[in-house]
Length: 113
Length: 110
Image 1 (cartoon, each protein chain N blue to C red):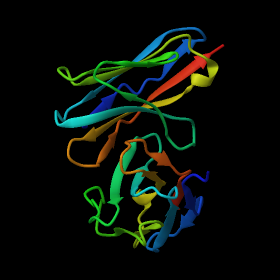
Image 2: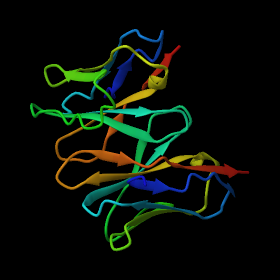
Image 3: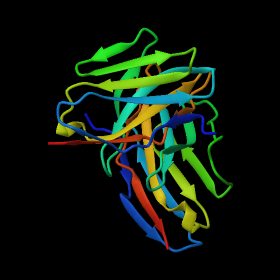
Image 4: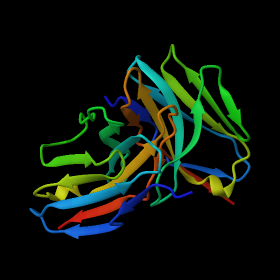
């Protein structure tokens, strides 16, 4: 079946612009995670959605970052007034309720000039 | 100090060698443990979960030592295709926040 998809695959933007990244989780997966991975670094947890529960936003680095998940499926991560340090690969993952296995999308490579 | 720490490597080993990676975690409330594999410029994929009793999957063996708060991964008879970054992953009790280590790079050479 279809895996996790993310769009765009690459995004180049100018400092100060807003960007929106999209994640389509695996159908039926109720849990959705966003991570950020900078060059040569590990994954940094950003935000977690589980069903209709309030999201865990504890990893968002600043108030310029926000995310929403509509209808319990598609999620968008928005970065306002982008900065050069926001340049990274943004990865989305989904999982079912009763398993810990996370399935990752291919990521969106964001470059802020 | 990072919550999950790994030796970044790189580990350079010949084909057929046995190689072991260790990972330490600082939060004693950690509940679930995993090893993920990430190929260059690709997304991470689950390699195996780590159970208290230790578990094996083919050439791969994972161990958990709760008292010392470390996790290990042993790869026997290394193949060229094992070349990748291995990520140690810890999930906290009572929540869903997942902490990834920075990864250990492995290069297996012919």
